[in-house]
Amino acid sequence: MFKPGTKKNMKPIWIVDDDDSIRWVLEKALARENLTTKSFTNARDAMTALQSDTPQVLVSDIRMHGASGLELLQTVKAKHPGLPVIIMTAFSDLDSAVAAFQGGAFEYLAKPFDLDKAVELIRRALDESLRESSVEQTISEAPEILGHAPAMQDVFRAIGRLSQSNVTVLITGESGSGKELVARALHKHSPRSSQPFIALNTAAIPKDLLESELFGHERGAFTGAQTTRRGRFEQAEGGTLFLDEIGDMPFDLQTRLLRVLSDGHFYRVGGHQPMKANVRVIAATHQNLETRVREGLFREDLYHRLNVIRLRLPSLRERREDIPVLAKFFLSQSAKQLGVEVKRLSESALQFLSGLDFPGNVRQLENLCNWITVMAPGQTVEIPDLPQDLLPSGEQGNGGAMTAHRAEAEPYISSPSEATPVHHSHISAPDRQLHPAQSWIELLEEEAMTMLSQGQPEVIVKLGDKFEAIVIKAALKYTHGRKNDAAVRLGIGRNTITRKIHELGIDGAKDD
View 1 (cartoon, rainbow, N blue to C red):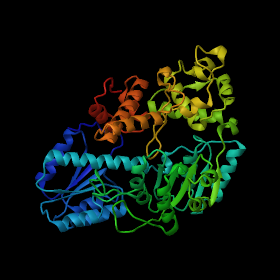
View 2 (view 1 turned 180 degrees about the vertical axis):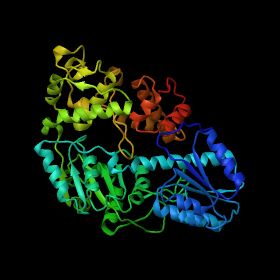
View 3 (view 1 turned 30 degrees about the vertical axis):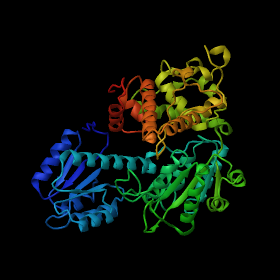
View 4 (view 1 turned 120 degrees about the horizontal axis):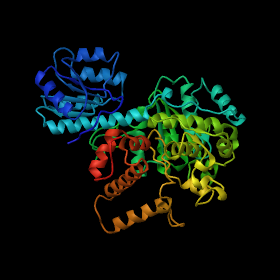
């Protein structure tokens, strides 16, 4: 049985039913799962409460005195389209089910229901709600763009000029240079600022899942599609959709994206009704799209659709004067996340860092500050306290100076909204070295091919479990077994990591 802890800032689950016994049973069952609830005896009271508050998940009866559950569903979807709503009814007729799903219900629950299955359904809705919350963060939750260098001032001026425009923007720059922050700033200062900002790294989603992520899917569209799911275009309705690493998008999906940009319509996977998209698209890439077009890997017509206004972000080595202020900000941010005292870099350490090339750019500097917060001794950090592979050969015990290869190979854990990168190259680094001719992606491909050739079932499930187990074990090793700290660094919820540790049989975790 699912036993999550109380997630910080998680809102209660609302139960709306005029049947006292149903409310009582669900309240008690969810309380055993450490989930907070709030109950209403009718839909009107819930509608009134929605004017000043929102739940994490809403569970409502369909037939009640006064307003119906379908009316409540309609009100919820108008105000909060991403909020999962589970509709219950004792009248298990087809018309009610169809009406509920057409209205955007997450799932349909017929009475009498099995309590364990009802709780499991609510848990799935809760996971969906938390997932959408993580990708629909408001701009105010994101850090401001920092930079005093002339190259960054040019970027700020461009953002200002585009502030009242809805034009498509293509952001280019090296990996880790802060392209998503610029996209967020463009959204924040645009006429769409009050609407969602949705980010999707197209290179981080497997090809088979990317179409569903972008456009959503209908229930039953493929194996495992147990519910209708809104894609990123629907989540970003009225707002901005940021497509990172657009140069890596599969060619066939480029055609679908071009169609949306051309006429504003798309279809969910398995759907037959066209959906209208009112979305501003901002794309980003570290690749040279002109070269990709010449090589036949990127559609030329899509390139011209995206390349209306181009913003180039400077690398960190082009704005070295910004390294001290960025380092101080990241150290403060990291200390706040971990609940520890902020460490400071000595003047000599700041000067030393300002002289490094940082091939991983701002992201690499942020990773370094995370490492310093956890690993560096004392509150004032001197040059010898820095990771050994950064130091000159005369000041380190082993390893050489940081190379571009090391920075490019640094692993990052990302979600739809880019979670905080995890920097752990200085913990048992020799164990992580790969054959020089093979990347971990190539090794994964080899393993997949081997399993497929052997006729093994559920290959993607097995590999997915192995991948999750390895990443979670690495995070727990990095945080010395502190489960909550590991969840923060992986960009997942405390409830999620607790469930994954149990499901995958991972040892060595402890509560912070």
